[in-house]
Structure formats: C-alpha cells, structure tokens
Length: 176
Image (cartoon, rainbow, N blue to C red; front, side, top):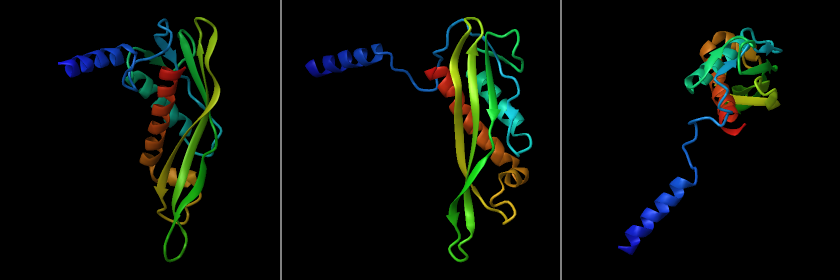
C-alpha cells in the first residue's frame, strides 16, 4: 500500500514540474499570432536554395499551429529573416578499391533573426543555423559540387531544407 502511494505522489510531483513533450507548444509571447517570413537572401551558388529553405521554414511554422504565416514583413506581429550562406561539402566516405569519394557530408547554413515587432524586441539575434546530411556520389562531376548534386536530386535538397526548418523552428518556438 505504501509503495502504491509513493508512485502516485511521485507521478503528481513530476507532472507538476512543467515537463512536456519536446516539439509541442511555444514559449513565444502570447501576442505573436501572425509571423512574416519573407524570402531569405541567397548568398550561395545553389539555384532556388533561398526559395526552398524559406518555403520549408514557412511550412514548419504553419504546421506547428497557432500562427498565421505570411510571406511579408508588414502587418505581422513578428518577422523571421534569413540569409543563406554558401553550401559546404566534405568527403564522408571513400570507395574501397579506387579510394575515390563515394559519399559527401553536405551542410547548409543561414544567418537568421527573429523579431517581435509589437514590443520592438529581437527574440533571436542574428544566429547561424545549420543542417547536414550525407549524400552518395552518383558521378565524379557532382562529387564536390553541391549545386550540381542538388540540380540532379531536388529531393535531397528538400530533405535537407526540411531538417533545417524543423531544427530552426523548434529552437525559435521552444527556446527563444
């Protein structure tokens, strides 16, 4: 009987501590309902990287619920801006026989700022966010050229953009 009572007390204590599942909710100020996400600036050589990253971030914010996400920086409670940096790549694996690169680690990064326009505060200062993934080399022409890789495999770029957006939005909503 004492054992069962201890479990009930412990369960109530843990649930009262404010623990919650990650990826749920938002710690943003309650007045932020409408978020503007204008097109990110593209400082990379990869065509459409700005558009694909911006769309992924908009979709992720919209999917988290509770916000209206628009492509404008006006008429909103908060605005998220970004500048996409050049893509970095490095060899992640070599072939056994010819010792040529068989896999690359591709990293995208963007400088991002999130401002509360109602209170005139910067909630997330200009920080660099990154996402990386491994990609198999399909030919020597695409091996060390991320732009060529992504022009052949748009799904790879979309997967990487989704990973980037999930990480970015989680940090903004949960840890600002």
